[in-house]
Structure formats: C-alpha cells, structure tokens
Length: 195
Image 1: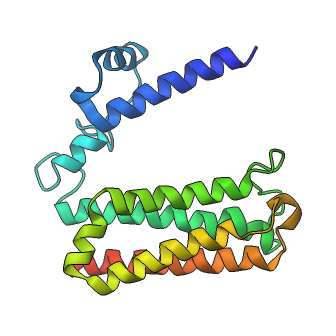
Image 2: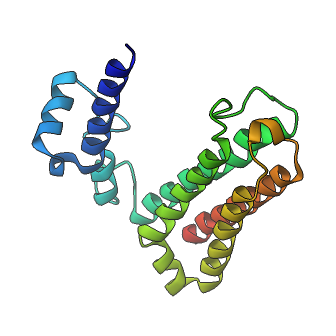
C-alpha cells in the first residue's frame, strides 16, 4: 500500500533535484512536473537554481559572490557530511551519547551507508575538477586529501559488522578518527582557498 505513494514522491523529488541542478537544461517533462506540483527549485530566495547559482558565481543575483566562494561552499558541504558521519552517525552510538542514533539498524546496512556518504565526498572532490586544481596549485593539499579520503573509506570498510551490534568496537573509533582527520584536511583546503 505504501509503495505507490512513496515511489511517486521519490519520482517527484528526483525531478525537483534534476531541475534545481540543471534548470532549463533539465528534460521538459520534469520541468513541467515540477511546475505543476509547485516544487521549489530556486535557492536562497533568489531566482536561480543551485546549478545556475554555481554557473553564475561572481555575477549579480548569484548566492556565491565569487567562483572561490562557490568552491568553498562545495567543500564546506563535504566537511558537513564527513563530520556528520564521524561525529553523529558513528560517534553518538560509539561514545554512548545516543545509542538509538544508529542509521539502518534493522537492515544491518549502517556501515554501507557511512561508506556511501564518504564516497559521495570523494566523488565531489575527484569528479568536479577540485582534485585537478589542488594537484596543480597545491600538491601538498592534494596529497593530504588523497590520503585522508582513502583512509576514511578504508577505516569505515574495516568496521566490524553489523554496526548496531558492534558500535563500541575499536574499529568504530578508528573510523571516527579517520573522518575527523579528513574533516580537518577539507577545512584546511577551504581556508587555503580564501588566501
């Protein structure tokens, strides 16, 4: 009974995300659906979708006052994800702060979810030209980022499964530390871009 409405909502939100990212370049059928459902695709009370804001960085009307600011915002979002994985998703249970704060406890899929979160950060870094920019302009930062991303992924993958039964294991602490180290490297990269 719930599958039909849930899948319909997923379809609608996917269209909303596509239009918010690609704006007028999104398929007409999706743009029409989003308009008909009156789903928000602009951000920050402005006239532009997220993608348009990035493309227009530094221009009047964009949320980003410069291209550097846009890149910093992307990296800050990556930092937020990494911190959430280490501090909240793994850390709250491991540190005893909130043992009920375990993602996907019944499917035993928590570790896969953590890994996928860090993979999304890796994808942003490597598939958006950020890596190429740092390799060219700051090889030391690029090297630190490569190592920190690889370590966070490795430590999460090495966690004892299932997390819901092993959240106090030392492998969880090692994953938290790796996420913290990655977060510090990303934060340093954001600061470096401001100089």
